[in-house]
Image (cartoon, rainbow, N blue to C red; front, side, top):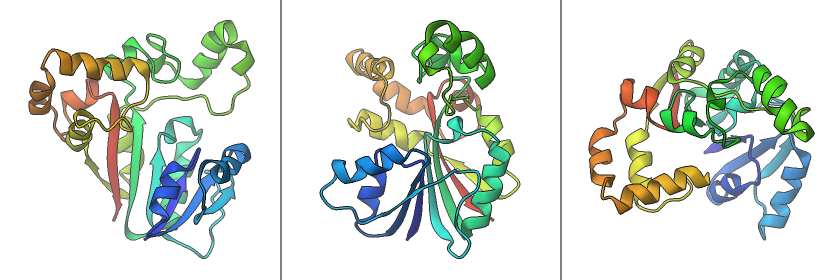
Length: 229
């Protein structure tokens, strides 16, 4: 496949997929892109330092675009969606993962800051109130996260894409011990407590891929596939 890893961070996903595919790794942070060479012995993917809202691809299109915990950090998501649609092949797919704004677990502890209720705040409010008072050294950050609800995501993607949730698959992998599904200490502790009290089977019965109450208000992170029409 021809793959764009958009917001590739430290490069783990790009490195893994580049073994059998043509992969372009794009990130706004030049420092992170340089770390790819430090993190892995051999780099087979292409690295581009660029802005996600104006993608530098005029003559190449992609089968798969990966947005892994990225979209919540980007302003003007409408422009991003237009760009994604432009460079994605007909029938191509976007894999997207992002924290759930209205998840009760994220309301208790925001996945980025570890504070209660911050998942509900807009980017401007986080900057003007929380960062200004508690994280002054980070107040000029350009990538402050503003979380999305399930309805938000469906609304902004629905003009170009069909959507499918993969919550059940993600939860199954989580209980198999795949720590890549969640990363925060709070959420990892919840997984351990769940296993300790033998609640994993019950949760697996409850979780589903429907656009209902479970995914809107309980699922901590969305794992979605958007297929271009």
